[in-house]
Image 1 (tube, rainbow, N blue to C red):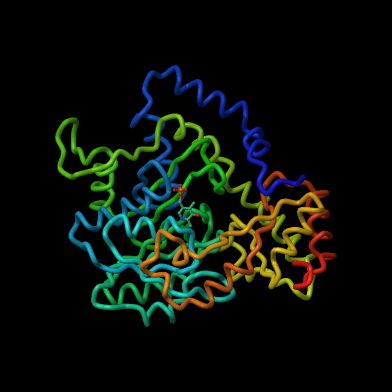
Image 2: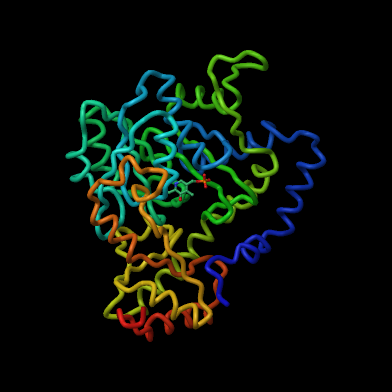
Length: 372
Ligand SMILES: *Cc1c(COP(=O)(O)O)cnc(C)c1O
């Protein structure tokens, strides 16, 4: 079986270095908010070209703490609106709801699956306070136009970079393209820890300082609490492991692109729509997502060829039981996408044989409704 993502093989490439890093943490006797986190934050801020990085417990927490930080700054208050792409992973919405804010769902661009600035304009109301740009599947959103919209309406521009570590937009890194960005280091992400983790990157010093406190019970110094904070800190072990993996992120992206370009060049099927690439450097291929009208047939046939394909995501956020209050919204593009998308395996450790097998299985697939 060719698994969707072979995390074991991916991490085994760095086994010796990871063990050394883990040993260093075990022997240090210091496990939370220490030197490893500081060193990782410095390295990741440098990598993302921002003034600050704050390691937190998860990608969801990173996004949520950005919004919470803005609430503490008085930039937004309960009931205010945040514009977000309707086809994102539910975590983007959860971060908004968690802060008593209202997610305003906007249909994605049909080709890039990302926010279209022209659509965004029609959803801005007096209560809108921010736009959350999700760089879905690893491709950066059209940020120049979004920044213009945000600026014209006095909105914060937040990036959900959970799938886009290392992507470039006009020479600048994802994570530095808005006012603040949230990253996830969930093991399956392009920069994955060996457990949960996340980070905020920003060049806003006020926001960074507030999030630094919020993540640590809202304390300015020990036992002195200025916010009703949370406990959400990237621990020393994950920070040390991520310092190792960050060194290889760029070379892994090159390998992912290699796989993606093989698929782009060789997959040819009348019933399959390949992804659209705006600029090569703006896509880091967290997921290689194709569209097929009868996608369940395709997935089944791939499975019969020992290939694991997945769906990101099978149900749109507004159709989830958790979001009953917005279930009535008409979002036909989003709903159709959720019925048609299929993700093919893509990683830095795939062999030529695996790629060949996948290309030929996809190309010879018989896709029609009778097979369902
Ligand atoms: C993974 C992901 C998140 C959440 O990250 P976690 O670390 O799993 O909490 C948020 N947004 C998007 C787009 C993601 O893919």
